[in-house]
Length: 250
Image 1 (cartoon, helix red, strand yellow):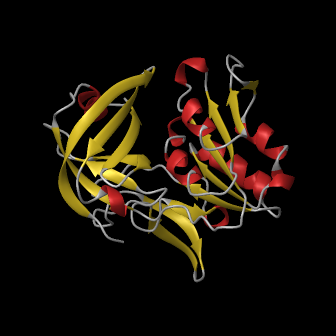
Image 2 (cartoon, helix red, strand yellow):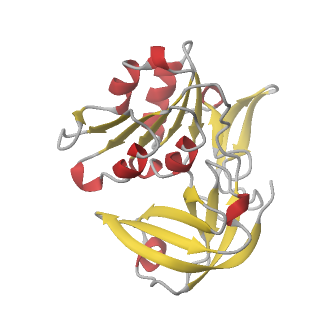
């Protein structure tokens, strides 16, 4: 895994849904190294710990980062302006493995949706299923429709798209796909893994609190199954993407 720290220029900061912000940042070196499913660790002014944010999309010189305000650090990030310098450690983690010739279904929930955009761009004829609590939190639908002609939206309250969960939609399309890539809250990932078990392979991207982002601080430990039995691995270094059957969903 190759990564480094560089100063990026913030080109755009836009609120695209209630409390959800869309950044474009620029650097001449690191964006071209990014792979789908990886993340970055952002140094926030006046804060000690960096904030891990998944990579929504990447170009040769730009990264797109979509995040939700959940605390003081992300609040500060949401108030930064175009033209500001941002120190970013990137690209980090092991992302999704996308193979040519397979048909993938990308399943995302809430703020777990953004990393699936760059991932879906790597696949042939993907299916995309996204879920949100309500219509005010729906993001990136137009972006996904540029990548796939099969984009499905579900909301918990039925205020947009299908009234239900992403697993309700996934069950209807299992016979069309070879593999699932999922990102979202643990209960959603467990439900997706249960639907896929014994039918199609499933990769899951875990969301965990973390400090360093490179496996040194050991904050983001999670219990997984390995060839040698149960073990504590680290989401930032060993993940964030795991095979669904390796994870203990606790």
